[in-house]
Image 1 (cartoon, helix red, strand yellow):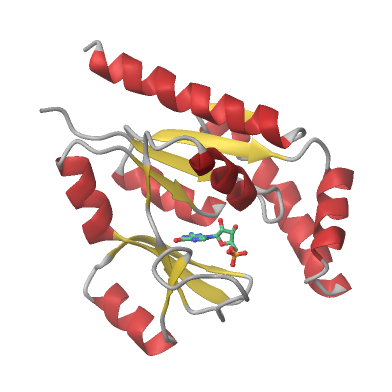
Image 2 (cartoon, rainbow, N blue to C red):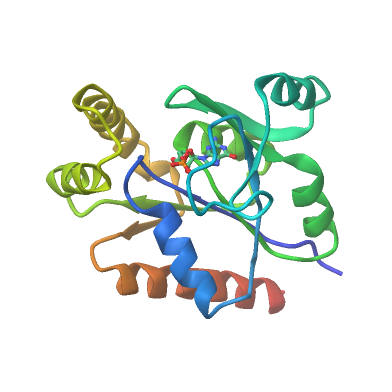
Length: 191
Ligand code: 5GP
């Protein structure tokens, strides 16, 4: 039996990675979502074990010390990590997995899983990214400017990814990602 395919969806903060995946999963179950661990506060409506595993900094450090993450990063002042056990077990069982992680994390995954499929979600423009961060309303000016500055750096990394998807219209971006997943699955199945 062949191993599962690891898909990595990354891109700058505010580009809409989460929204795109939520929309994708509404009518597609061809890949399993890897739930990350984080030390940030749970937001209203988020479900433990579905959106994230919400853990303390001490717990996070403990898992890290036991090499329990395939990657981890500090994003906007909080720790985030991808649990290793779930990903490796599913891949070994031949199940395809998708990670939704920031670009620092994607860099680490690339070193360990060079055969994974890397998808970069880009905003239609930096102006539009700024609009989206404004709309989200959760960012102070300082934090927003930091995210925009980071985004400019992150966008320079796009050439390292296998696919670039522009998140202009949500439905187009979702369709594009679904197409990529199905194409890669067909390629694997024809081997
Ligand atoms: P949020 O807290 O808004 O859900 O996510 C903040 C950022 O952290 C997003 O860019 C998201 O992609 C990233 N993120 C979520 N989970 C992980 C993870 O496990 N590892 C890394 N490196 N980044 C993550």
